[in-house]
Image 1 (cartoon, rainbow, N blue to C red):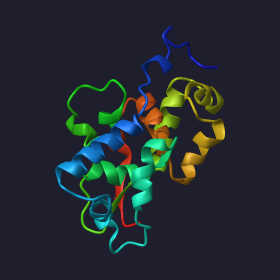
Image 2 (image 1 turned 90 degrees about the vertical axis):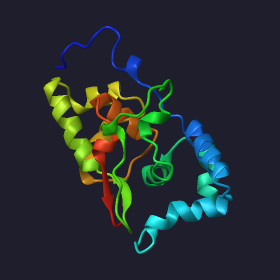
Image 3 (image 1 turned 180 degrees about the horizontal axis):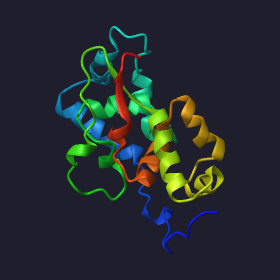
Image 4 (image 1 turned 60 degrees about the vertical axis):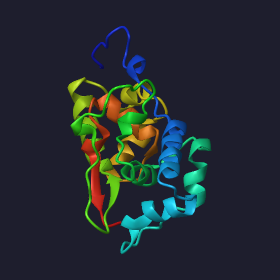
Amino acid sequence: MAKPRDSEGWRGKLRPFDMKRLHAALDAERQARGLSWIELTAEINKPFQGTPSIPISVTTLKGMPGKRSVTSAVVLQVLRWPRCTPESFLVGCESAPKQEECLPEPGPSLILRFDTKAIYDALDAKRRERGMTWKELARELPGFSESMLTNLSAGPLIGFPRVMVLTQWLERPAATFVRDRSR
């Protein structure tokens, strides 16, 4: 049985991730640096060199604002290029980024990925602390089913904006769960 929640509920505190604003910021920075979309894509893909990962395409970058979901691998590399935090693109975010929100700076041939097992472990710990079942937790998290949450333990990829729902519920910066990997 779940413990009672406050009357406002967690959903009232959720700030959606604004993919269109991220894309506009990326485009503005691209223009400020005098880069074409092809040149921008090449710069964002530099960390992929020497890895078995598939580089991001120009079409993927240009099409981001029209997508309901974009893989986290793409968004993390996009955020990394101008050194932005995921929280900077939450609707209503007006404050300067906090140090703990900054993404790690991986070395050469390393790309950023979410550690979904770590997200699962944090969700499980907070869920247990609050006396919730996975089903109750899923009802509290917009866009998630019970199986989507429990499958995080197996380490699947997760996309934006969905991952930001989880980090906000956990009350932790997204960067807490970002690791650098060679693929």
